Amino acid sequence: MYNLISSTTPLAPYQIFWVCLAVAAGIIVIWQIMCLAIARYILHMACTPRPHTFEEVRSRQTATEHTDYSSYDNVWNKRAFEVDGVQGKIRGEVIFNDQANKDLRQKVAVICHGHTMNRLNSLKYADIFYNKGYNVIIYDHRYFGESDGKYCTMGYHERTDLSRVIDYARETFGKDCFVALHGESMGAVTVLLELGLRSDIDFVVADCPFSDTEQYYRELFEHLFHIPSTPIIEYCASMAKTLYKYDFAKCSPILDVKNSAVPVCFIHGKADDFIYPHHSVDMYAESRNPLSELHLVPDAGHARSHLQDSKAYADIVGKFADKIENVSYGTQPDITQQKIA
Image (tube, rainbow, N blue to C red; front, side, top):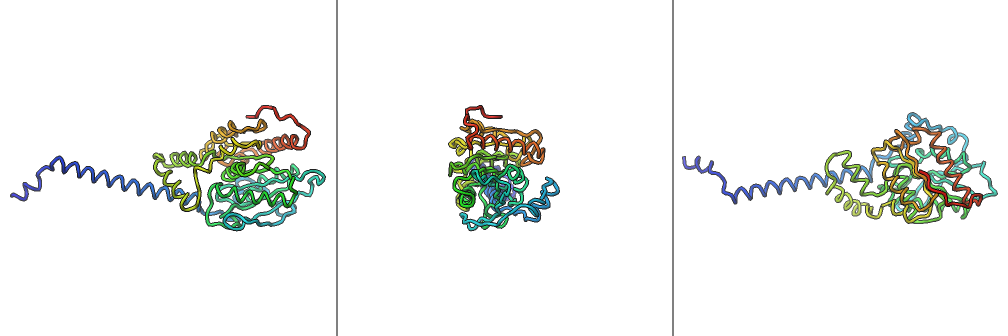
């Protein structure tokens, strides 16, 4: 009887305090472990995703984006190349434009593909530049396609690889060649970050880039998981710096756009819920060059502006290229016109 009564005796206030404290501590520990696990998963998906094979990209582009490979397969004069990147060899192809005017500065467009893709994803844009008289360079980012690399960094280290591809372009087409950069998604981030490394770029076309790494991850995480991004993104940033030497704080394209005089044509789908359109809007507002443009494509999702209306897309890029070329070649010296939005 004594033991039964003792077992049902209410806990003293100090005992209740310690029990509550232990429970709270346990919940916090479990939450932190969950946050670390989620952060590691996010970083894995960003830096070491499953790359698409060439066959997968070709099949996807043919079926969903109606990419015509006939010129690439049968007509274009192309040559494989490789350069030394940060993690090993960066490999790609240079497409020589036999219709280019050899008496003028050679024009070359370097096209950067998006996350998980490879250089075949760039062919839908290569046509646009080739038809404008450009030689075209397409290549595989580190970790993807035929290039070396154990991980990708969403543009952070890729900008250094791109710089070496641009060096190769100048070696191939002349030190004074006219250089245009085009990038889609992660590729767009890469070409904008390049503005922080060098100024010898004539123009950039950035299709659906993000403006700041941490802001992008926070928005994407909260959109996908519907829970606060703190402290998960902080864990992501710390692990990225330790594991991949990938510094979120130093991967902010908007700062490079702000500090560059290179004209940029921003293109972004209004229906993009993977990288919100405000990223391009914000960077356009910071661009110093009055020739920069902003085009928001109605109903287009992420990296779907070209698919939404390929002719209109080609028209945007073509007219922008013409405008910059006119200035560069001296036929339109006045660049005081207002930016186009």
